Length: 216
Image 1 (cartoon, rainbow, N blue to C red):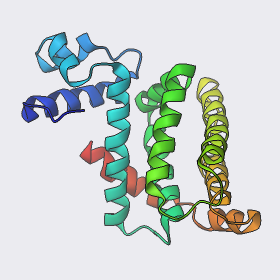
Image 2 (image 1 turned 45 degrees about the vertical axis):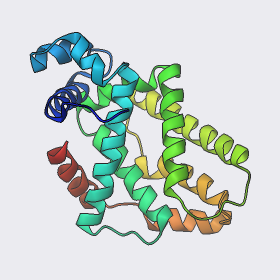
Image 3 (image 1 turned 90 degrees about the horizontal axis):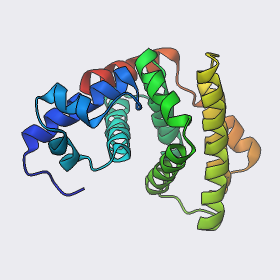
């Protein structure tokens, strides 16, 4: 997206939009509700976010950036890029599972095949940019492996949210990270042991979620 001309208004729109996403969910957050919250027109909101998907992805991008900073500032273990990525992922979903509003946002997004596919593509590209090590498989295989692994993760997450069941974040996200590590040349047992040793503690997750909540 091109740099907004009016950064002050852009910041106001973004804050109100994020507030509504995290309190109302994706479906109930509309251009009109954001416009009303900011005291501007619906068209003005669309000037910054041409589609609701643009808004959701902008939020995810800002959330990942905030988590990156929080994990660095809190001094949480960053043994290598896979450890750091796993920590960011745990913080990402811990933040989105923290209360009723944010869980509704996740449920809205995971209940739509179209939205989930766009989120998967966004996260695939983010992960590909984040890891600088050399892959041992083709880009096509890596994308397919990541899509299958994350797709299964999101399907299980959707079912747990819909049925109000607990979701073991470290275990299920750990499987995704192990799949990624395999494509970078790590053996099964090596990746399994690495992931088991690098799950964040509840205190670490709480600290990161608190810092990010204050920023966003």
